[in-house]
Image (tube, rainbow over all chains, first blue to last red; front, side, top):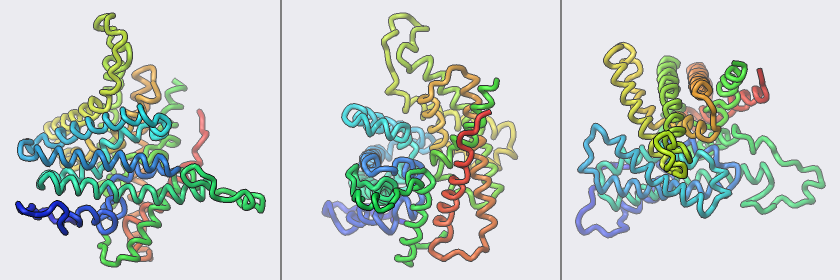
Length: 220
Length: 205
């Protein structure tokens, strides 16, 4: 886990080693999906194709980063008893903005994501980062932590979507990559990949590979 | 009546919250280590779903939808407050979980001790908000349909978490490759169970 006592000194540069670690850590060592097992709900349902996965990753990154920033700015004024409701309201407001934006500019993707845009509100990554980081850290590190975790989430999403789209429909980002001659020779797209259960199994395999490579990750 | 039973079976097995839509996965993976705690969480999710989804349906139909405000005055026929639905739904859910927690604490301390730690968790369980959002998308007509849908999805979720917990208890001593232990194998197990649940597809009563 990221230690919570790195309260930044006055003259620390914007991208000091500590801050960079906040940004890079979630990509591998403390990845929100594979290590902390947060935010899987939406991670799986939107990964049939790469495009919705990318849009989802960007939306989540924006929401995590800005909710971390806002909560961190007002962290000293929130009464601890009602903090969850305050956090939820701020996150919900941000998600409404993202949702309206998607509806206005990317209607087809927004239709594909359906309820999962709304479900960003209850994405455990966001609440987890708010509780564990933004509530007791300064705004700038919190913002970076949000971006880092959003990217860590996004990377897994895109990896899963890549395999599902490639093996499931022979395409990448909507472009056909498996040549027609393969199909003529008898190659068939793996229809199972498009179905929801395969997302779970792919994530299971990613966790397996990741943990075999980096041995120091603790098994719980 | 037949319609309601059909809806119930659909929401338990075919549109199962966990296996078809992956909702509530975070607590599903985190809390499914023993059968006992997962039964507790399952019951808590059923209770909260049955309370919040019909309540949110009322909010949706009498406050948010386009033309929903006509019961106040016909001037509001063109008002569409649908964009507020996320914020109102989540506020209802957070308030209701708090309320349920307080009521249980007051009237049944033993149940509170069993469920207590899970109730705050439930406010941020995707299955709860997901239930409300699917309700909004499917446009149910009567409150009976909505309640049956909420009950069915709750039971479906509880069924999923209890069965995965039972399997996890069973495989504790199995010989699994070390890096796959814990989270990894749980994902793969859930995937296999989801494939099994797909065999319910197309059932109609």
